[in-house]
Image 1: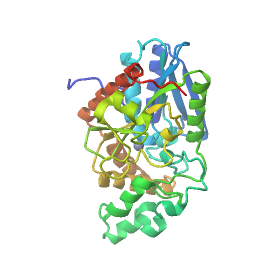
Image 2: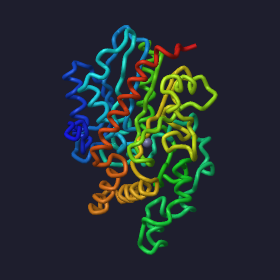
Image 3: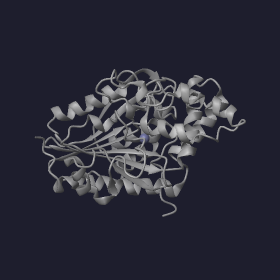
Image 4: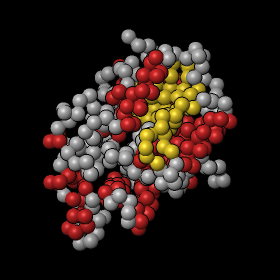
Length: 361
Ligand SMILES: [Zn+2]
């Protein structure tokens, strides 16, 4: 096992996308690409959300596996998708069932090793029905909480030059609730729908039009938590039919959105999954990497580099190193475990249609 091929993992967005497109071509599968206008990656590569479609004409049931909602977290998800294509994980789907691999929902963030997008928007807080209703007071105000959330500067000063201290309280609140007050702050939900938002809605509309109206959705994330452990977070609350379906498909491993503490970063208000119809079943798989404070330190560095316009190369390089380590660590056991556990979750999703009726009303 130690020598297992982990070449499904990539260091850059260009490398990840190249692998995805190559494996799709190998398997003879069509790819639909939504190009992010105007912007490029660090290697001047084009940026896109790509969808590999394994969808027979007869399909009325669809498994959607999405990755890269949180930019940098997409390196783990991308590896899962590439390896799934290499191993033919979805090659023999049951009759009437299709699968769509949505790669790089936030391609700019993935390419630039950021969690947020090109406008510093946390995509998983951007799917709001009305932005006027997202009052800044509902979240935290980074300006009042301190510059640490904005740039790391005041933490740096107040802790005597060590940005690694004194981060816990307010940042944890920001992490769980998001904010719409400061466009340079962490966990900023935006003031209008981001490109990734309208693109994702377009993807859902495409499948609704195509008759795939039974959906089981798996959204792959990484971040704070026990190293290598997967949390399966239901994207619909306890007491809903969608929650019960998730339990039927994934068993007790599927936990409610806010189980055992503050809401997970991937299940805030305005999440991607909130766009799904209520006959869909949706789960967020969150692979733990490091304790939350260490992840936040990486995010603060990335935020500082972004606010600096990536001019300071030393700052940027440090931010990238910390971000990679916080969201896709260079650890073979972790990388293997992400693939294995994700395959298990996806297999259960495919089989899930047998167990639950997700027919639209
Ligand atoms: Zn995430």
